[in-house]
Amino acid sequence: MKLLKNNAAHLRGRAGFTMIELAICLGIIAFALVAIIGVLPVGINVQKDNREETVINQDGMFWMEAIRSGSTGMNDLTNHVVFIEIDPAQGSNQKVYRWEPLAAKPGDGHMELPRGVQGAAIIGLLSMPAQADLVGPVTVRNWPQINNQSQRYNRIRAKVRAISGSAVDKGEAAKEMAFSYRLTSEVRPIRTMGDWGNISGNKLAVDSNRFRKLNFYEIKLTFQWPEYKFGHEERPGPNKKVFRTVVAGRLVNRNLNLLNSLDLTTGQFQEDITSPFFFFEPNRFSVPKVVAGK
Image 1 (cartoon, one colour):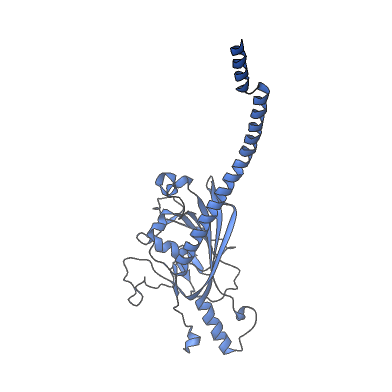
Image 2 (image 1 turned 135 degrees about the vertical axis):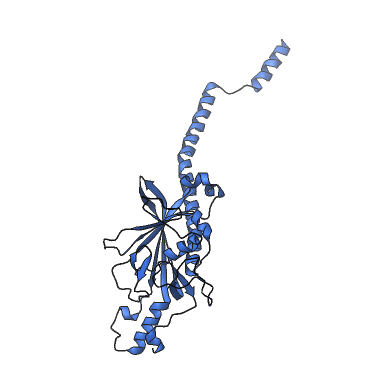
């Protein structure tokens, strides 16, 4: 009898939870899970937004440096640039010109970037001044121009797959799902005192104004992301970031023809005032004829 009492006391000390206690525990866990599951999508979206903004910051610095330095290599850009569209002289009835790295087939609505120099062509098109008088897909007239008061300007935009970011997104199979954005480029001569007042009576001021407009430019790059495709139409998302800088140097257009010899003085492609491909030459300056006294 004494042994049975001792066993009963021992078992009472090792008793488990009651059903009520288990129900209360499950309720607390369920309440916590509901809160965690509710917060989880917010955390995932924040992480996604931070990753996309980091990519934009890195790509923005890359594009700005490539344009301001007049890069003519970088053929790997064809792996990231889907197309470049130029809407010439907004407000006119001219068609939108579309360039792509892919070969154009009969009936396609785009032109192929020059083969062998496609990276240079991409930088050249994005460096086109907003006021350039584009009279055809491959023809510019009246360049250089120094009047930036015109209300007609070219709108240059590109669809780009992220250059930086995860290597998983760089594979051929992942191209359609990779993060992409819209890049809009605006290159304009800086505004000078001649834009706000009449300086025609001051020859020194007129010459100085001409020199500044030929050699000092503002670059504005606008990034909008992500880029969505609805049928045949491309639309940017709600996110936007702008990069700006000023370049001191001449802006020249060059003929990207590999059959032509290079300029012996610069080692670059030959200058061609009718070409739509523009390149900056930092720290090299154009001297207007009136300044040179010619």
